[in-house]
Length: 340
Image 1: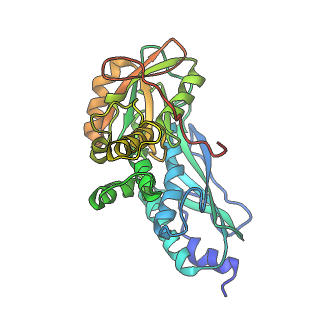
Image 2 (image 1 turned 135 degrees about the vertical axis):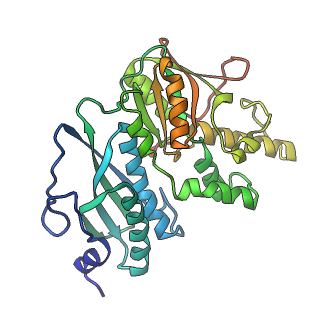
C-alpha cells in the first residue's frame, strides 16, 4: 500500500519553473513579478455535491482546476500557481492517475504550476487554491459598473445546467442532444484569455458559476446600480434553444396536468431556469462602456469566442428581465445556493 508521500511524489510532484521552491517542503516560495498584484482564490468540490461518484477522474481533475481558473479570468489575472488539498476514501491509484492527468492537462495549457498541498483520508473532497498576477490597479472587479454601460456575456448560457438536469432526470434529451451538452458540464473551458483581454475595457466582471441572475446581481449590488436584460438576447446552445422553443418563458403548466403538452411546458420551465439560474457555465459576464461595443465585437472575432450584449446598466436598483415586447418577465429561481 503506497504511503501519503508516495502518492504525492508519484502523482503530484512535477517541475515548478515559476516557483522559487515547489512541492516537497513545509511551504512553497513564490515571487510576484515587479509591478504586479497577487490574485488569490479557492474553491472546494465535494463528491455528491459538485460531481457524481461515477464521473470519470480525468474530468473531475479538469473541472476542479477549471473552476479556479475561471475566477482568475473574472479578475483579469494571469494564473501562475496552485495548491491542492485532497481528502481520499482510499489510495486508489487508478483514480489518482486519471485525476492527475485531467488536472495537469489543463494546468499545462495555462502555465500553472502545482506548488504544494495536502492529502488525508476522508470522504472525497478536492480543494484548490489558485494564485495569479495582474498589473497593479488593473484587476477586473465587481464594483465598477456604471449607468449606461452595456452588459455582455461570453459563450452560451445554461448548457451545463441543462446537461445536469438531463443527468438528474428532470429533462429529456435525445442521445445526440445530450452528447452536445455534457462536455459543458464535465470539462468547462475557463475564459482566461478573454479576462486578460478585458483589462482596460470592462468596468466590472464576474464568472457565471451560480447562474446569470445571481452572479450579475453581485455586480449590481457591489456597484450600487441596476440592470435591464433581454431574455431573447441571451446566447443559447442550439439544444437549449430548441427546448425553450416558442413557448412564452413566463408560462407554467397547470397544476395536476400530466398530458404531453403540460410535460413539455414543464421541461421548458426547466430549460429556462437552466439559462437564468442553473450555474456551472463558467462564462464571463461583464459591463463595459457602450463606446467599446465595436471593440468587443472585434475581440470576439479575434478570440473565436461569441460575445453577446444582453442589456444595460441602469440607475434604478434591481434586475429587470424583459421579454421580446419589453415587458417585465416573472422570475422564480435566482441562482444556486449551497445552503438553500
